[in-house]
Length: 331
Image (cartoon, rainbow, N blue to C red; front, side, top):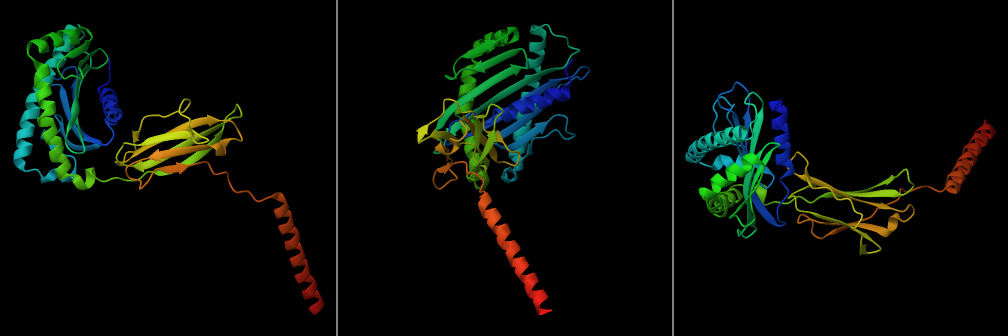
């Protein structure tokens, strides 16, 4: 039996992990709908989260006392009450549809209705800076079992799992792919452009990354050089290592860009190099917040030669001795 709190946390982590998978130099709108089935509850919990780029702009939770769509960004408060009333009504209708889909998946997979089950729906559109439609996507996940994905052509489906295969057949007969294509290329794009207009001061700005290189000696004797970029926005960034001016990406470790939790992003790129050859490697960072690309390298810590320390000690001793002799003579 799954714990609903754990399921919710895992699904929200999937949301965060999915927020950087779009084209460079573009904007995107994504919607996450989550249905959580708990034994003994007549209406499963329904959560709706809307994002523009990495910013949550609206949200709904059926467990809230008022259960209405609410703004999650200050700039969304410019929308009139009519928008919130219409959208709340649409989301309430959608919640009933998704609950029926979840029930369908449970029955088709012959799973116990006395267990916890979840359904995740993720869809959105990606536009260029000039507003041109670039891509759209839709995916339905019966958590841990079935996946139903709208293909890149926005005209066909790929299904994995018994319940998803049955749902695919039903949706093909109902021309659901064409409906989603119309939504993604039309209403979704218009909503995204509207958000970009309302929140331009927040969404259209850029924060340059804070960068530095760290040095870590490995047990094997070689060295890990890690190039860091912190506190940047938007998420699009390019980080590469070069050796003697030539690209050195074959053995480079480059994890996905991750949200920092404060609206900015962070990323690092690492290479393992022979000890003593660190200065042959340079890290190159490209980001729209930078006036020009950065080139960084590891800077060895400044050390004072031992002979200079000894000379300093000797001179210090002579000065102190001279002062003492002078004071004794004067007395």
